[in-house]
View 1 (cartoon, one colour):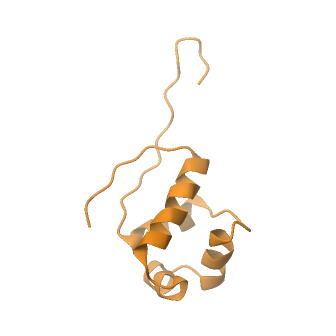
View 2: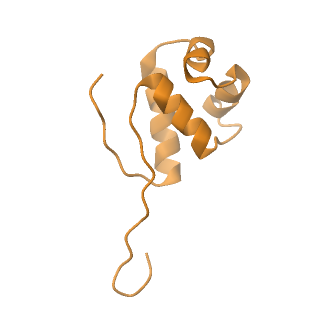
Amino acid sequence: MPKMDYTWDMDTMTTALRAAIQKDGRSLNKLGLAAGVNNGVLSRFMRGERDVTLSTADAICWGLGVDVRLVKPRRTKGGGR
């Protein structure tokens, strides 16, 4: 699988993570086993009933073979974001 390098906000990451799970093609049970994540957690996440923690998102990405990292946003000159 090719290495992907993305920098996203949480909403965009959630959308991309759901898309990557769907694209993977494995059942949520098989993905959950590979990632060490409970099938119920994955199922509720995919239905939009819950968010996932960063550690759970990291585990899912590991199970998918996707490399992710958390980065701090850069500040603009005015001190805001």
